[in-house]
Each structure stands twice: as C-alpha cells, then as structure tokens.
Image (cartoon, rainbow, N blue to C red; front, top):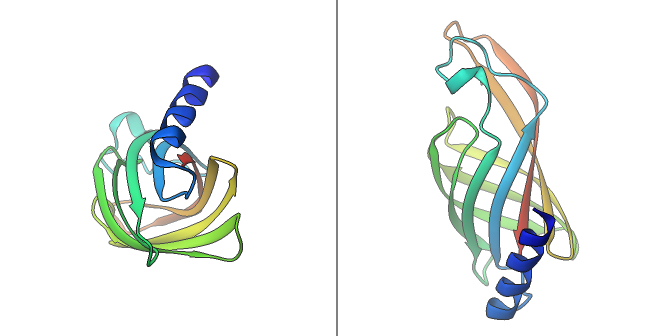
Length: 139
C-alpha cells in the first residue's frame, strides 16, 4: 500500500506540480461510534473516503468524496492558512445532517491530516460528540 501511495504521489506531482491545490481524500478514523438507530450500514462509519478537491487561487475549494455515513458529499468551501503547513477549512456541502462543516489541518510535504468534529445523532435527538481524523494526499 505504501508503494502504491508513493507512486500516486509522484505521478500527480509530475503532472500538476507542487502548489498543493489538488487533494485526494483517502481515509478517516473516528473517536465515537454511531448510534444503532441511525441507518448506518453495520453501525460502523465508512473509513474509506475516496474523493478529490481543487483549491482555486482565491482559496475557494470545491470537491466531492464518499463520506463516513456512506453518502456522497459535494462541497464548496474556503481554505485559510495559518502558515505553510497549518490551516483551516470551512465549507457547505451535502450528505450530512448539517450542511455546514469545517476543521483544522496540518500538512507535511504531500501528506495532509484534517481534524474535524464528529457528531452522531439518534432518532430521539441524543448527541455524541467526538473528533475525526482524515488523511489525504495534496499536490
């Protein structure tokens, strides 16, 4: 798997350069479990979140990915930077209970980790709060 990711990274850098405008979403992990009555397959989050996004010069971002509740998310957002390796994202999108989301990210070379809020809601409006970590490649 490590070799495949290395090959993908090298190919995409050679095709697109290293301006970090392209992002390939790979996987995620969650600190909470979904409630049993929320219609999530096998009562487990989907941790294979394959997708793609593009960041424009004005830092607007558009993309789509297979989300943690097995739905397609299409989003439009804004990506800000604290410095070259750390920043934040806020976005509106489809596929979740709330259409607004956001989080923080850190980047090392072409590897990026996003720290996002994780919220699970049952049919009685009981909530569980936690965090999700998402891993992706940027180029």
